[in-house]
Image (cartoon, rainbow, N blue to C red; front, side):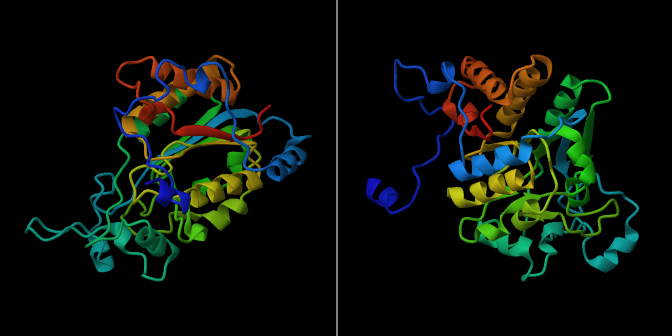
Length: 317
């Protein structure tokens, strides 16, 4: 194992129930706020970018629980015309159900990225993040009245994610799948709604290079489900590219996960994180630390697998 890791393969991620390590000693977060810096040059450029920036007027925008497939129950039932697209739900005859995400052509970026991370098998199924809507609703309940926006379902779209209106918020929160392609980092990105209300396919893949081109002058971007539930274990290149992309777009800080995290545990951590930040007035670094310490104190969530994946990168002030 050590020889393989010396050649570039990373150590395995923690698993549920795995011990904390360093028995008898507390992890660093108990006494310290931890911020990861992508590089000194990135931090210097970031500080030049945000030096004279005025704080945004609104608190938080949340994009969560996108619609990935035409047979999602949220798709309108009166879609008889959708039969011409070949994307309707299969009849109950035992045939394999067709998946909307199989619609991208083999040459498309989404198809290539899904193939690289190992999602493509007999067909294509991108699992719905069932806890992400509850996560979004919990954040909305903590935000000041009139100062937050929630885009779920069909509204959790590429159009919403690229809208200049997101720059009006201090925090932008994405609760959706991230495709982190280590073989071809340029194919990394966020998967948003892939169908419209009628079940028709649409481009819902926010590619890494498109993230770099966004205008997103916000204090914080949170990728709460990035690297959750899709594909094989990945190395750092894909995540680094997406994080730097959001910083290049103007985000002062980015919170992202280093490994696949339990959906319910993520929702619990995010609820605590936003409570500390929106109601407790803590900085993002202090709020993340407080949320992780709180999770660690709960018997159910004590394993580092549930709370240690999320890291804050960017501005440390």
